[in-house]
Length: 435
Image (tube, rainbow, N blue to C red; front, top):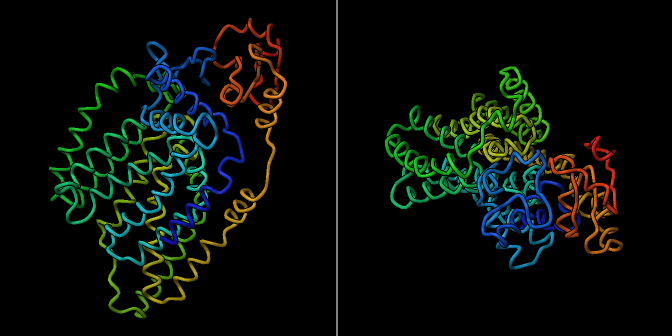
């Protein structure tokens, strides 16, 4: 409970201090179209909502880039709390807190050691990358939550029995409707694990995964239909895929440096004590239990370069909880070997530079270009005014309600001549806008 409260404080403190950035505002605007039209659409009656020339939308301007579940959940929050920053970020923040508990539960079911599970929860609560994901109005923490729920249902000797089978199927179904690429990675990791390490569950695992996939296949062929090379033309080249994979590896290391350091320190200390005969009788984990989080990381890395040419950290967030569970195991083994060894690793976790920087961020005000632009237009623009900008159009649309022209939608740029307000940003300067 103390760890959950600490995690919640870190996630919710000054949650609304910074305005929604581009992608967050896009999620909020699409959620508002759900309230207006019943489905997420790329045109809200005033503005087009695209960042890549409308590729994200299919027939009748309906969103097809990934699943719709995130938009419906956020639409409920916006309906209850209004069209503001808090309402937009609330669902993701709540899911972030729940993920701390689910990391605890997954670790407990894998290794049957409460101390190790508590260590995993503590690392998750203090993991700045996960905290930052939870503070964004995006699908990222929901994706982690549903995947963790499925993994918890699968693990343990009673995995996929009785109600756990239903929990697995429902959470996987919902994960598909958040982001189907990650659904594919999660299913692949679990099925391969069942084949190699837990054949007693293999039949039921394949049956349930097959049923969920079959039920969702019509959505992939209709509403969500989009060609990979249409969305990411560069992925036609296998060398591009390898380059993206390398980028993911570098990005992951840069963001998860503290958990990876804990993994190394904990493993080294555990091996030293175990094989130095200073911890006789300390039972080690089963290979099958260790390999599930390993496979989750590997399949997340294997699938995402085939679906996205952007080597952003957000594309590989499924690997985040798995990369927390493994360091917790190593620290738990070290802790069982000698208490000071475990304490040393925990000190490493709480003394990282990223946490210091994060504490500074949430305790200080920061006036961004997006905030300044939105406030200026709110104070000076009139209803019916047109705004043209080279970047940050979606926050402007969300906070001001004005008609905002953005050159990367592909709309008719002749309307720029009627713009009363022009905002140049040092990003994506379009020749059409300059003209």
